[in-house]
Image 1 (cartoon, helix red, strand yellow):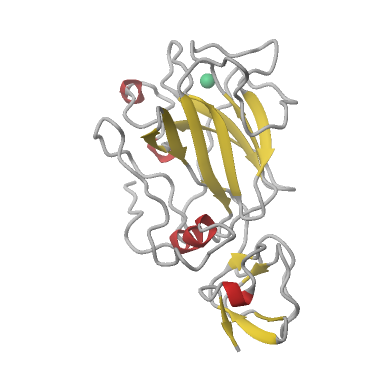
Image 2: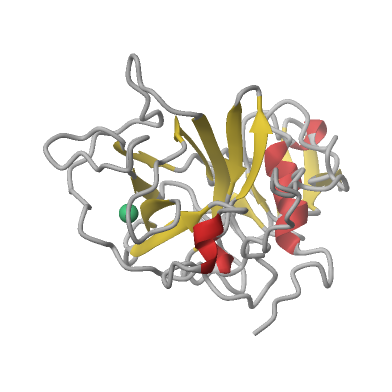
Length: 271
Ligand SMILES: [Fe+2]
């Protein structure tokens, strides 16, 4: 089925803009395109990554393959001293079904080295991490090498707290073998651009975690208002007090330091 990720501005795009703005000025990027997703270096427009419009499908699963190992070290960088290979950074967010970010999601990555080999004796190019309060993650690694029968890919397991594991793989645009690898799925393409001699990739996961009609991760604010609190998932219309003022939520988000109502007019209005 053909997908139409640009048919209307998704809630995710707006929310992602707020998230991407970081803790200093979340309002600044509201209304700005969420992420400068670019075409592949070859000039071939990649298939879109999964959009998180309401009702869209979760990120599809893929086979684990023969090289997964449990108990990987907790680390966001798989680089070790002298690691050969083109540097690769993968950033993104993990969302639930209502496009709210999911914090504390376990992401366990494993991949081949520059020669296409997996470390089955140790844990090179294996590592797990947890998404932050805003649902974001960053993986620092190298572009994996090719091995027979497969196109270029990363393996990952993603698991929200108390939810089933999603096992899947992420792909690179513009790879000749994407056309011949029967496992390849365009819905799992990262966006990748060259950056300073390395590659910068982005991918957002959508996990099968119910979030409708409202409460996302974190505690729900008490009805009728309460104190603003970091980590709370606020919905449009939620009311809080902060300092001496009362505020109404304009945009669903998970509260972070720096997003206090007076500092984030895109998220909160007085009254
Ligand atoms: Fe593999």
